Length: 184
Ligand SMILES: Cc1cc2nc3c(=O)[nH]c(=O)nc-3n(C[C@H](O)[C@H](O)[C@H](O)COP(=O)(O)O)c2cc1C
Image 1: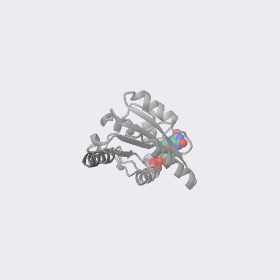
Image 2: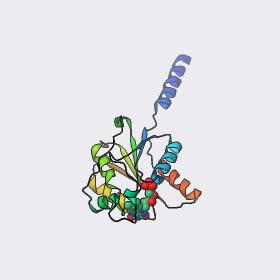
Image 3: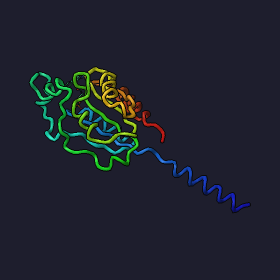
Image 4: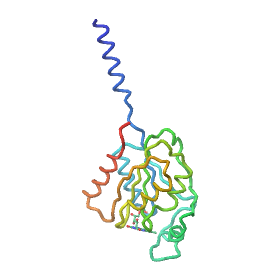
């Protein structure tokens, strides 16, 4: 009797211990550091791994100069089919259950390099949480376009961090993004 009780307890403890946490990767593109810093703080808050999406040709300050309509970012915004090449893709993407994709909003959409990233990496079957930083735009338009372009992915709409947030507003964004991770 005692033995079977101990056995039952051992099985219970083993079951609880093996209820795995989802494995989470935060990927992000950032041209001027805002999305990078948010992603780093989100990684601290969630314990997730981080991967920076970078162009094979790095983005310079001049590339995102809003005063220059000839700048690279404007050319990319004007051509939704343009696919800037990636520097690299994450290794061992297979092991992740949840992948965040963070980006600055450009012209009310995600930058084209985000489309390259999605097309070059197999995200099927994973929960994909989109989030952004912006001057004032909401994430919704960029998010709806992503969902429409890649309907096979399991999308979750995160939120956007708008310019000059109070510390409370910034924390609220991190909390909301953290809460978007589904239980495994
Ligand atoms: C080319 C370009 C287009 C932008 N378009 C928008 C926009 O449509 N709406 C908005 O609120 N902010 C816009 N912004 C502001 C950025 O989204 C914002 O500064 C963002 O936090 C920058 O992130 P990063 O530092 O990670 O690159 C734009 C910035 C650039 C450079």
